Length: 100
Image (cartoon, rainbow, N blue to C red):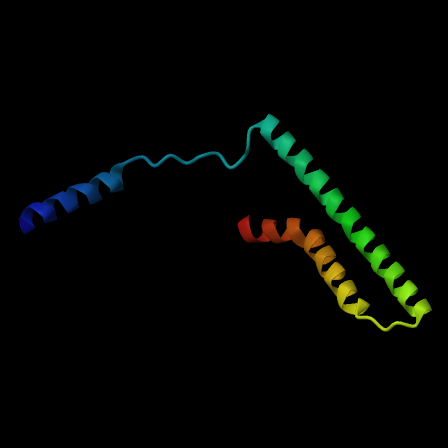
């Protein structure tokens, strides 16, 4: 039994060593690439617009709170908005660095 399993294992190793493993192309088809680029462009634009809106809204909230004399933790909110902006801005280069 042990010899049979050993010979089957060797046959499998030899088969795997000589088998042609398909290597897919690294580029997407033209139509698909254009559609994906369009969607990614819209997502990048929306992320940038959301970041600008977040900074504006946080600034307005800070101004209103200061006028009322209320102390608030708006700096932490501004930090979260800034962190989101950094993520949106560096998403493309980060993915390119990791997977290129």
